[in-house]
Length: 389
Ligand SMILES: Cc1ncc(COP(=O)(O)O)c(C=O)c1O
Image 1 (cartoon, rainbow, N blue to C red):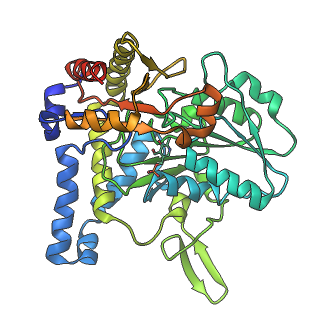
Image 2 (cartoon, helix red, strand yellow):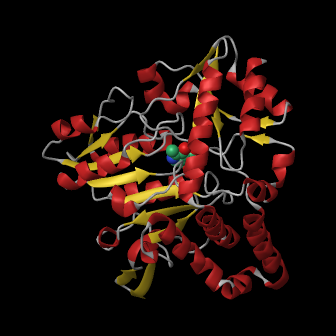
């Protein structure tokens, strides 16, 4: 059972703000902020390298916490500077050659799709779109029919940026295993708001960011890669962290997922992200999901009852992300008007989710995203504010 008072006490901005922008960047809980600022203070006091040497245990804590959170091994985890850098590190390293084919759904995150498009052009890859089922999620039953001789990879965004959809990641994993396809899961919006088990999902690699539902600092991200796969893959860039320099003609790659890491990093960020994951584990991922999903659903229902408001979230199961539009209301102006009332949201212009927007005929969207420290009273306040727009 979540202690909501404790969560809010750890989140001082709750006193002044309704922060419904957790899918953008959440608010760091006090222990995470303390872990970050204490390390920065130490850097100032003794020097960056010296502070890092003293913080080896806390830095390692990042790998063990992430491994526990995802049901993985510490060697299967890498610290990255963002979800996009993590996703690119995997994607650009995969040994895809001309004629190979990649399966995607229209809800794929924008930057991932751009990387796919660029690589498809450079390397001559084919892209196959998996249609949606009647719930608006990836139609897993249509996937076997799309497999061709050269199909190699399945890309999925677990919870898209632009909607409340939760994709059936485990069913996609079963399909990928049956057809011996690689499976890369973008879990940027799902890690931290629900339990994620990479063994149950059956993905080969998974990527995410620190600042969203994990409530870590900005400029941090992570990747998981199944150990046997990581050991077979040459990263598309190497440095002195990713590889050991053995001689004029030789180097040895770091074991497991560490070969995707860079030497220079935000040490305070890595320590704080490790602390953020501990915080999520202490709160309980089951408990977080059990609180935020009904609260988001309650918000959807209240919004849908307002005149001129439309809620746009497809899916059989829905996340803590709620997307809406209001007839005659410009989303940029709405965001500014809400901000003036102490309510934080994001907007999703059509061009940030182009394929999804075209397919579902979406307007620009307002995105409200809830976390466990949010309350039903804040939901009511938000609905009233939307009603007044
Ligand atoms: C689904 C999804 N994937 C990836 C990203 C990119 O994350 P980052 O900005 O950390 O690279 C986002 C960010 O909004 C996202 O929503």
